[in-house]
Image 1: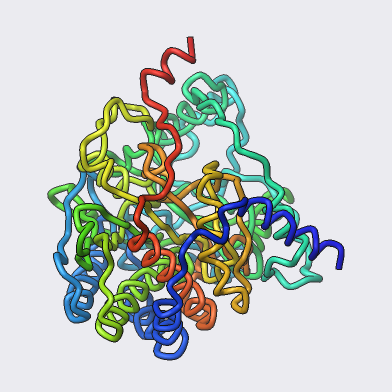
Image 2: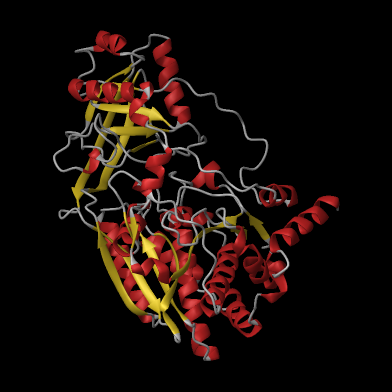
Length: 529
C-alpha cells in the first residue's frame, strides 16, 4: 500500500501546480475510446502487415509490397496527402530465397539455423569440416592462414543454457513503475570513438583475414535465446558498418545457430571428433537504385493547419520471422491511430486544429536511417558523421511533437519524457482519463534505439511510450519467433486508444508543446576539446 501511495505522490509531483489547467476534451476521449476499444481493426491491420507482407527487410521486394499495401489502405480510410518520400542512398537490399543446414558426420541431424541478412549465396549445397577459430591478436590469426578455405568456421565458444523456472513474459508491477517514475533527469553520454578501440580494430582485421581465406561459411550463436529461438540480424565484413549494402562488396555466407545445436557441434570438436556440415543458402541482392522510402499520410488541420503533430513507427523488420513485435505492432498501432482519428472526425465533426501526420519509417534497423533522412530533409542540416544539427530549417519550428511506438506488443503504461520536465503536467492530465487502462506513469528518463531520437536531436519534442516488456527482449525481438502469434490484441487496442488521444489533444492546444534546448553540432565540437 505504501508503494502505491508513493507512486501516486511522485506522479503528482511531476504534474506540478498546473495539472488542473490542461484541458481534456471528454467528448473526444469518449469517441476515441469507442473507436479504439470497441471498433478496433488492429488485428486485421496486423495480419496484413505481418502475415501477408512479412518480413520487411529494408531494400527488399517484400517491403515494397508492404508499402504499396499501406499506402492504399491509408487512402481507403480517407487520409489525405498519402505518399512516399524517398531517402538514401541506402544501398542494395537482400531477400532470402532458400536455406537449409544439416550435420552429416559423425551422424545426421538437421541444424536449426538462420542466415544473416546480406550473406552471399553458396554454390548450391556445400559440404565441409567444421573448425573453431580461436584468436585474439593478429599473430594468433597467422596459424590459421591457408587452413580455412572450404570449411565452416565457428566464431563463438560454448554458452551455458539454464532452464526457465519463471515465464519470460512480464508486465510492469507497481515497483517497476515506481522505479521509472523515480528516474532522475538524464545526463548526456559522450559518444565513443569506436575506431580507437582495440577490440574493434581487431575485429576488422579478423574479418579481412576471413575474406581472404574464403571459408564456406562463418557460424555463430547469439548471446541469448534457447529452445530453438534464434536471434539473428545482419552479416558483416572487414570494412565499415554498412559495407554489406555496397554494390560489389563480397560478403561471406554467415549463419546463426540455435544455441543447443551450436553447443553440440562445439562439444564434439572439443572431443577431437571430426564433424561435417552441409549448407545451402540462396539469396538475392535487390533494390537496384539504392534508394528507399518512408510512408507519409495526413489529416489536415484547421486554424493551425501549418503546424503539425507527428506520430509514427518503423515499418521495416529483420528477416528471420515476420517482424511482428518489432515492429509490426508499432506500425499497426500507429496506422490504427490514424484510422481512429479519421473516424472520430467523421463522427464528432471536430477537426484537429493542427495537421496530423503519420509516418512509417524504413531503415530503422540499420540505424534510424529513414527517420534521420526525413529529419534532414525537412528540419535540419547535419554535418557528416554527427547526430547533432548544424542548422535548423523553418519547418522545425512548426512541429509540436513526435510520438513513437517501438517496444513490442505490451500495453502503454505511460511516457518517457526524454528529459523534458515541462511536458509532465500536460501529459499527466491527458493520462488521467485512462487510469482504468493502467496507464499513468511518467519518467524523466531517456529511452534509446528508435526513431523519436531523430526528432529529439533537432529540438522537436520526441517521445516513446512506456510499454509492458512482455517477452520482447527474451523471445521475439530480432528472433525467428517474432510472429503474429505473440501479439496481444487487447494491448494493441489500449495503446492505439491512448496514443490517439495524445495526438488529438496535442493538435487542439492553443500552444505547441514545451521544447528542450537544441544541442548544435558546433557546441559539441567546442565541448570535446
